[in-house]
Every structure is written in C-alpha cells, then in structure tokens.
Length: 168
Image (cartoon, rainbow, N blue to C red):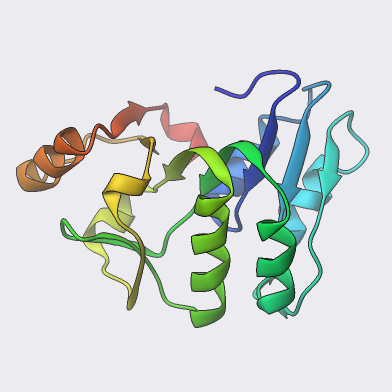
C-alpha cells in the first residue's frame, strides 16, 4: 500500500509502529509523524522523516502546534491508530490532545487507513475522533466479528484489509 514517492503520515501507536518497521527499506518515501518511536525507527534510512513541534505526551507530539503543522501539509495516505472502536459510531481515543491531532491527520490526507489491533474492536474510548465514513480502509489481522459493524463499513465503502499476525 505504500509506494516509492508517496508522502504519508504515520500516527502514534503500537500498531503504526509495526508499519514503520516494514518501511525501513523504502526509498523516495516521505513520512510525517508525530510519533517519536516511528521517527527513531526510520532514522538512518532512505526515508525522509518530518516531525511537527509540540508537547510530548506518551511518546508522541500532541498539542495545538502539532495540529497547526499537520494542517499546513498534505499527504497521499495517512495511517492512524485508535484506542478503540465504539460500536458502529467510529474510532476513539482517550487523550483529548491526541483527539485533535488525529482529526487533523484525517483532514490532511487523500486516503485514511486505520491500523486496528483486533483487541480494539472490544474497547470503546471516550472521544470519537473519526466516523467510519472518513476512512478509506481498516487494516487488521483478525476477522471483524460484529455483523452490524461490517454492514456499517460496507455502507461507507470502507475496505477491510486483513494482514498476518506479525504486524499486530
């Protein structure tokens, strides 16, 4: 899904960190990330890494400065994490600071993919930061078991992409 000459945004999170591990050999790739671990993984590779400023919270940059930086940049694809999936309402996050960052990442991207660990489908966070209609796809390792959620995703043209377990 990530090709040379793409400009992508990788959000903070453990699942998005697994994505970064798989991009280390890419050439001519530009990555904007608010995640210190993602930036560290891609450091000393041929990937061009850009980071916003802002306050550090749980190893990611998340405040108004971060949002302002992201608002000034456009990406082909964004890969976002979530604290949970709230039934059929959307993706959730617990941090109010990360809420605003995630909202802006979505606005700045042509395509938005949520990387969701299968356990997150059973957790509902406090703040819904993305309705399913804002997503291009959900990437996960295990089949989604909730028929209502599958119906909502289909109605919103959200691709469900299954990968092998070593990315979770």
